[in-house]
Amino acid sequence: MSTLKPIITICGTTGVGKSKLSIELALKLAQGMHGWKGARIINADSMQVYTGMDVITNKVPVAERMGVEHLLMDFKQPGEQYVVGQWVQDAIKAIDETHRMDMIPIIVGGTSYWIQHLIFPNRLPTPGQSLSDSVAQSIANLPPELLELFNALPEHPPSAASHPQDALLLHNLLTALDEPVAQRWHWRDTRKVMGSLRVIKDTGKAPSEIIIEQSKTALIPRYRTLCFWVYAEPSILNERLDARVDDMIKEGLLNEIKELRAIASSPARSSPDAVEKKPAVVTGPSDESAAKQTDYTVGIYQSIGYKEFHDYLASPEPSEKLFASAVEQMKYGTRQYAKRQIRWLKNKLLPAIYSANGGSDHAAALLPVYLLDATELGDQWTSCVLNQGERITEAFLGNETLLDPLSLSERAREMLTIDVKPTSPTEILRARKKVVCPACTLDPSQPFMVEAGSQWEAHRRSRTHRRHASRDKKMHGQSVTRRATVHSDIPSKVDAEDQQDQQDQHRSIV
Image 1: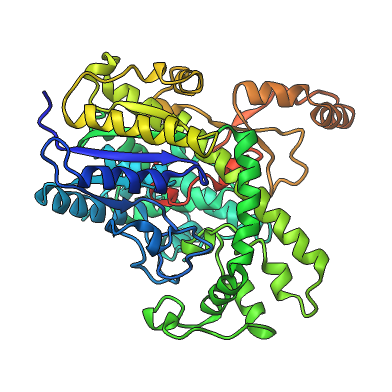
Image 2: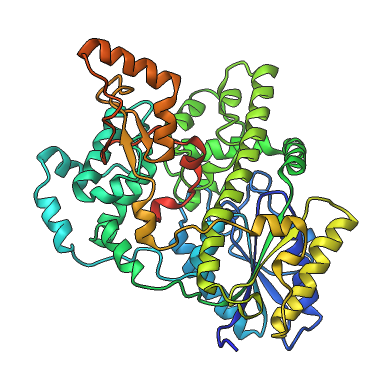
């Protein structure tokens, strides 16, 4: 029997009832279960840490929390940045405190990236006091332009769309300092490039050095963890998400967005005092200021709805057409976010959990994971989500034989059965390198890149590539299609969904 203390995690897409399940489980535990006196809920939603903004972040109203204590929620100001490493440390403190009270911590939220780093230690870089030999040598060899950039990195990543030269220069710097990691990032994906550079600045080590160190350490969980994945069939969930956007607008979404815009345009936006007073409706110059200053990849400004309603709220004459477009963009963004959440769970969290379990029988797994089917609401939700969740929780806390996770439903069998994926950091580092397509690079200052392997082969067969290659052959007398090269200072056409996949990944390595 494991000596690790138990926790429960509840993951899943937005709109499937994760919070409802966590509250119901906490109420069940409050009745007494195997000596535990109840439960406390620890928020793992990166947007719900911010005070106020209850509509745009979809917080459960206080009245519906049924007296269950919620931690790490409503404690950061909207202008503040709060990243994964900070949350993990705060969550560990809350978990330890909860265990001392003989209560079970229930960690719930849609930011599965945070939950994964809570479960598995030693996968986040730690601050260093000095430079490694390789980084010191690389810095010594930097040309003056790149050295100046390294010594004064911009506060926010430049936009590759509006400032491509700045974006490419940033990638050139990463290439000079850590070529293996630079090969993974597209030069347009300035957030990931900047994240890798920040790792070097903060730790004194190249990300690839840290990756090699991590590869020597097995994935060992901090806690004996019962993982619930609350899942709904996307075709059904999408209709639910669209309806929820309409409800959010009725509940005051636009007023919250206006308040955020006022904070973004304030010189003291990162100060707690900046949100003391409720601002009036913002128009005119302040709207322009908000647009110029806001980084939509940072803090609460990532919330779906904030960026989507910019044109409507900034317009001197807001129209029904602009409003309808903003609503549709928000609905589309919400649906895409749900897709990305599923992708992370299947491609990142599940492989890590299966690797940590070592292929052991589900009854002996340190990290049993169950998919609860929330496709249907009402009595079906109660039966398939709540009742099953309660039974599994009781067996888990009582150290009883657990059900086979694949036996719960056909959807559970389908979604929990995945292809074997690499979980070793060095294997991940070697994967997904970018190659430059010379034929399709129309502007040398903005190289066109694709991912090596199947994506490159598909690109080579595309009509656009064949047209460009044919043009080059006529101009130079030979085809250049064979000359894709791994090039670490310029990546491929960025997958738009993957670019948004990481709310906190500027603190990640790979």
